[in-house]
Amino acid sequence: MDATDCLNFKDLVERHPGLERVVVFDVLGSDDLIRAPRDLYDSWVLSLVIPLVKTAEDNLELFELKHKPPGLDVHKLRFDVPERDLPEVLDWSESNARRLFDIGMAAGHRYADEVGGGEGAVPQKR
Image (tube, rainbow, N blue to C red):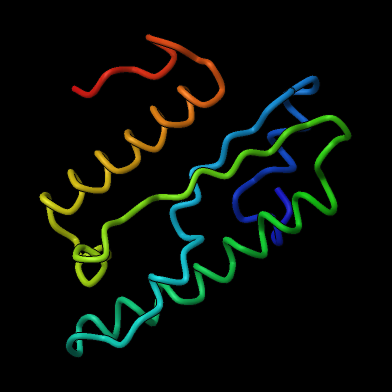
């Protein structure tokens, strides 16, 4: 694994030659995650997340420039976190984990609908 390839895209394409499509759930690719902290604990969490947001952006760009084979389509799925949920989006709680799971599942379903995956292309919500 390349130390500059934190998401391990290089290994993915080396181990799976012939891939036609890579779908990336771009969880950290939103600048909305960078905001003023609510309190000291939130400030600490943000101090960890802010570099991860930049690393995620750089990692995808590096993959597309350096490791992406010709003909491979890269599709980035953004998480549509409602504005009202943004202040709590990084909280470590069961309710937040469920909310983010549902948001990710909805993004997956929208993508499957857009590319014509049809019914069953994405597992139904548990």
